[in-house]
Length: 370
Ligand SMILES: NC(=O)c1ccc[n+]([C@@H]2O[C@H](COP(=O)([O-])OP(=O)(O)OC[C@H]3O[C@@H](n4cnc5c(N)ncnc54)[C@H](O)[C@@H]3O)[C@@H](O)[C@H]2O)c1
Image 1 (tube, protein in one colour):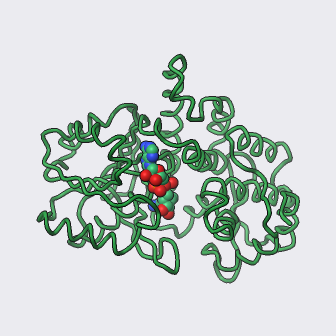
Image 2 (cartoon, protein in one colour):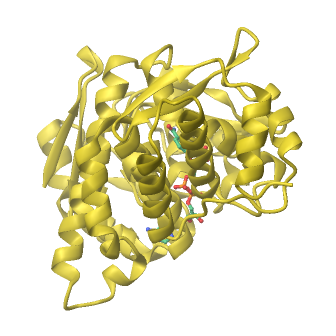
Image 3 (cartoon, helix red, strand yellow):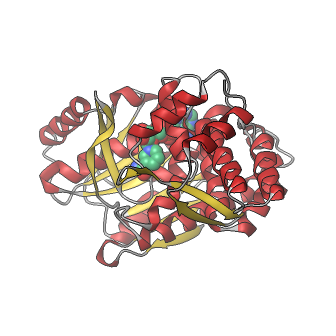
């Protein structure tokens, strides 16, 4: 099992990554002094697929399972209030522990409930999607959506532990796996050229078939464990330097500026988050190339890796002008200027505010926009 520390003084915690480790969770919680009374927050599908293993892991620890309906639209205040009602009914107290068992939606929602119930009780993240294991479960961003916008309500509230079992990934649909892979590629570009090389060399393992082929399963699991652990290490390092996203943590938004615009304009339907981020990363790389920050070969490597992973590198049927305009309302606007995270090489990025709308529109047209 890999163990990575998120260094945040008195709020420090470990990220554990392993294969088939759900059954060990109770022992770990006892070791950490977190085993008094447990409330597992999850959705029905995750509970069906992996709940037995989690419950076996919690044998001997008093626990209740609280299910919420599946999907982003249930990440809202009403569902959070219902969970809080259930905690009150079960007389949850300050020493109780919430376990968030699911993807990023459950993680954000359960984290928000933990942050607010009795002014904050302990919680741990047991992420079950790739996106949650490498990104959402780490860093303490909790929250729910408001009808006027995503993640408008929430707070920074760190978990006591992140516990990622890569076996959970074996049941993920291919598209959900790919959305997480976009974030994995992002880590290589923003921070670690060797990791990027590792992804290039092992891309054949990075699909759902990897979990089905018994001949190569052991090798695949090893690759997946490395990928989740290395990604977690990079996110943990960045969060430790900038817990509340006032500076460095902004580099985690690489590919997200244009990505968010594309997601919003296509109403979260044509492209999912990771697919939009993949396109956004290519836009950023091409812009960096125009500004003579990044060489042609690096742009080609990024596009090549994304294509091998089944992620899009072109935009279909969206006018470039619409994307450029949409950036005006993106939250990455500071002081009236759009901040872009641009790669200087594979493994290093800079933040620039001097990308002209014209250059952006021209890159978008090169990539298929009208
Ligand atoms: N807090 C943060 O720092 C942070 C960062 C990135 C994203 N997010 C949030 O994360 C959310 C997206 O998370 P996500 O991509 O994990 O999606 P998700 O939580 O919606 O999960 C996707 C789907 O997969 C299902 N699922 C979960 N685990 C499964 C498994 N092991 N096998 C089969 N199906 C499974 C879920 O039921 C759900 O239908 C968004 O709400 C986003 O705002 C938060």
